[in-house]
Length: 360
Image (cartoon, rainbow, N blue to C red; front, side, top):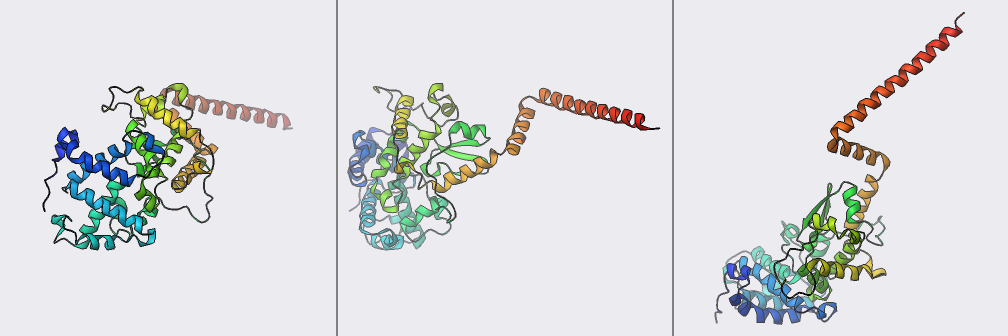
């Protein structure tokens, strides 16, 4: 039997009562299956709100929310029943194509488009925006195969990092460009001079706290992403408390201007975010080591060491002075030039006098 159509995208974006009444109850049931009991259970509705927010993207792609939720339940069961090497995408798709509520718009489409829908379901369950950069042009055969594509393992000759060892201020002082991102899988991506840093808000922090309880993230080996991001922020902003976190706020790393949920909150966004960061900052031990983010941490640390060599630092400081204080810079250059000329002239005069005295 056909199901009632989903509310349109505008209602989903505006989070209207029609949208909440339609998607809220099935999302709550999905959240109860998707998130195992764990650390975030003390956070009211954190998992439910995370799942509800992801359903808007199904509507945006033109798929039924109710059908999508049913398919997500099936994908969760499939992944829990199979070890990582047996989580074959085509096997899941072939089984689901026989179900009556598999998307009708995919009926005559090639297998790749059916597989793309399965990857879309995985995106929603992992609460990430998009996996297309990692699955194009050729996706991995298994769902778990996405993990090494997002987070490549470190080389055989590299020693794994023991901790997150760089702060946000150190990165800025050493000339890195900080680019904020809303994608949790892009945190600490380093390219050229640019380091991507996840923008943290109250909602984002709660989502990260829930991540280790996400059974699908566990199934593909990504359950440590949330805690490692929070551990990294414990180091990134460890010296910013005395300045009221002015640097991360100015860079857009902290989003403290949320309009949702402000009324009735006991603490402001900045206090809520930084309090949770401090909680993770105080934790110590082997679980604080970057494992999933190891290759990214190593790449940034290697570039930091290169930039801290004296000749690189001298060259960078000279360029900075030329850019920020051109008059003072060129005045100093000219003064140095004339000073050297004076020294050369003095030395020449002395040698001329010595030679004159030695002549018979």
